[in-house]
Image (cartoon, rainbow, N blue to C red):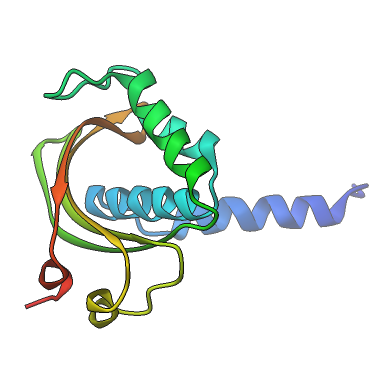
Length: 158
């Protein structure tokens, strides 16, 4: 029997084999991947990815819902010519298998931030975010968020 599309067969076999041999991703790794993707989306001003990162059921203690958060994100993206982020995850906890609580510090600036030591000399917005993520159909999404200002020292790992 002769294959008409041998290259396609080889590629398909490689994909199936690599998937079968790869180590399963842990929930923490999936959360970290979600946070990395969200950070890249913000820096690239990718509103589609940012929107899909927020749960349809989003609500927070200040009465904001998903459309309100989308408006805040859109306004930030439009107001800033360039966005550069530096983040430090303080902790990730899993009170339930489908829920993650994340504390993350994020510095937002108009130019790249190479390391936390630069924050004292940069004009950057520094925030501490408390996020509740929900695993919805195998995708982590922000269900709730609270934020407050942070200090440069918060970005130093001790």
